[in-house]
Length: 533
Image 1 (cartoon, helix red, strand yellow):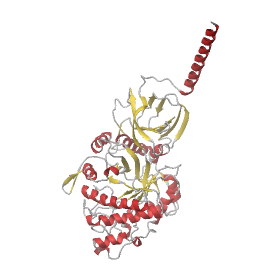
Image 2 (tube, one colour):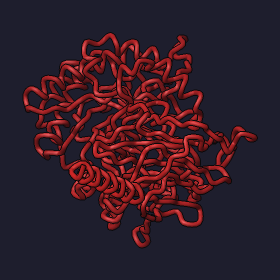
Image 3 (cartoon, rainbow, N blue to C red):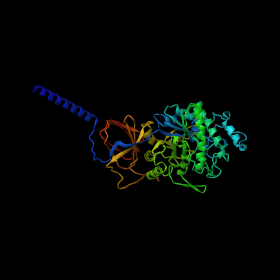
Image 4 (cartoon, rainbow, N blue to C red):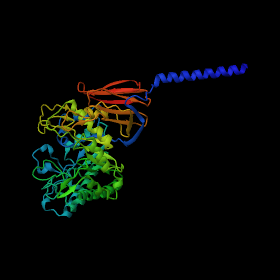
C-alpha cells in the first residue's frame, strides 16, 4: 500500500511538472489559434513553388557614361551595396557599335564595341567576316571603359553573384544593312550565313570576361525582344528582329559554340533565351503572318537542348497589372511548369520623373504578380540610372544629370523601395510558397477593384508574396494599396516577428521586432515585409 502511494505521488509530480513545462513553453512561444478567424493563413499547408535567384538591373544606357564620372561610386553603392538596393544580378550590355557609326540622335543610347572596325567591312564576304571576328587580335578590350569600370565598382561591393552578358544587336559589320537596327520594320537584320560569325564574335567577348577578367558570367543572352520591329526611320536604339525560326536557328548556333567554349575553358556559362518582349500570349502580324510567343516557344522546343535551358526569359511589359492576363499566359505558355521563368526587363514606360510613393506600390504590384502568377525565379529592372535632362524618361532606379560636371547629384527614385522590401530580406535559394487562406475576407468586396496611381493600374487586394527558407524562416511581402488596414491570422506557430513598413509619409524601411502573437495587420496604403521565425 505504501509503495503504491509513493508511486502515485511520483506520477502526479511528473504529470504536474510536464504540465508546467508545457504551460510555460506555451506562454512563451505559442498562441491560441482561432480556426474561424477571418483570413486564416497556413504557410505549412501551402504549395512550394519556384526557387528564387535574385534581383537585378541592366547597364543600358548609363554605365558607358556614369562609369567615368565622379559619382560612380555613390551610384554603385546605391544599386549594389548591401545598404542600398542590394541587387545581386548585373546585366552587362555587349554593344553593337552604334557609337562608332552614330546612327541615333541621342548619344546616350549608343554603345561602343570591342570589335575593331575593319577598313573595308562594307565589302567583306561571309568567310572574311567569320575569319575577322574569330581573330582575337581584332578586338580592343580597352573600349567601353566606363561601362567596364561601372561593372567592376558594382562587383567589388561583394553582393553580385550573377552577371549576364546580353546583346540588343549584333555588330554592324555582320548585319544586312551594316547598322544596329533593320533597314525596314520586322526585317531579320542578321543574315543566316553570319550566324557562325556572330557566335564566334560572342565567344571572343565571353573569353575576355570569363577567362581574362574572371567575372562570374552565368548567362549569355544573344537575342533581345526578337518580335519587335527594330527597323525603319523611327529606330532610336540598337535592336534586331528575328522571326521565330530565325531566332531558334541563331540560338542553336550560339549554343553549339558555347558548348565548345565551356568544354575548352572548363566553365559553365548558360544561355539566357529568348528575352521575349512580353509574357502575354497575344499575337501580332509580322510580314503578313500572325506570330505570338507560342510560335517562338514552339521553335525553341524543337532544339535538342531545350530541356537543358536554365530558364526562359520574358520582359514584363504590356498590361503590367493584369492578373487575368498572367494567369491566361501561364496556362498557355507553361501549363506544366516545363521550364523556369525569369523576368529580365521592365520599366514604367512614362516620361518625366516621378518620385511619388505610388511608383513604389506600382512596381511592387508588378513584381508580386510576376512571382505569384508567372512563377518567376528572378526579377530584373530595365536601367539602373536615368538622366532627367537629356533623356527625361521615368525608368531609373535613380537619377543624375551625367553631363552636368559641376552638379552631378544623385536622386534616389522612390520606386526602388519596392526592390528593398525584397532584396534586403530574401536570399538566393529561398522558395516561393502559394499559401492557403481560409475564411478569406476581402477589403474590396463592395468595390472589387480599385484604380489608383496610373491608368493601367487596377488593383486587387491580394498583392502579396510568401517565401520560405530551409531553416523555417518565412518572409512575406505585402503591398496594401487599399484605404483599409488588412489583418492576417496565422495557424502555424512562430515565436518572433520583424516587420518593415514603408508608406507615403515615410518611404524607407522602418523596422519593428517582438514576440509573435498569431496575427499581423498590414497598414493601409503601405508596403510591408514581415519576417516570421
